[in-house]
Image (cartoon, rainbow, N blue to C red):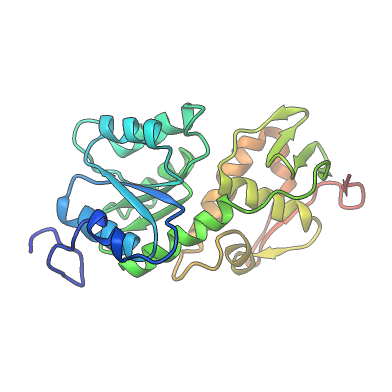
Length: 260
């Protein structure tokens, strides 16, 4: 079948056809944005089978409307859309107050590193290239949702590391008192590095803690997120040191940082 992902399947039933077969409550809503019906149906089928509530959109305007009206927990976004590109949709999602914190996984045939860097720099949380394993996509969705829904710690718990302050109860971070506009993944990465300041964290360790050890994820994903985080930290970005051949270390006030 033209356009079908491998392994190739006949077009599966839509999620609404599966709802009556699900046991338990479908708690997370996923919006799938892709203009290829076969791919949309296949992704929606596997996500519904995994227990998610799924809706779909085939173009930019419909995607933005669905994101505003339905308030999905996560959006799977194809970059190659007619009219408005996935990059433009992602940028608009991050601008809007009601969608700035929604999880976004980019799904695309583009394999160039520059495309991944651009997507992550605009605020995507993950990036998966076609052809892909639907089972892997479901695992990545589950991992990102766990990060997004991690329970807040007790009120008043603030981690200070140099000019960086992290309010763990509110999931907010500031530099020199100015709030940072971080994605959920960037926040978790900053918190992990700051909590372990003074100690080198390998890329494998960061993948396990921040990304939930997602299968086959490329280590360049860590590097690109660190690069983006440094940019957002401004002059405090140099607190994240690259330890060549090992990983990264946060050197912010190792002995002075504290939880309050």
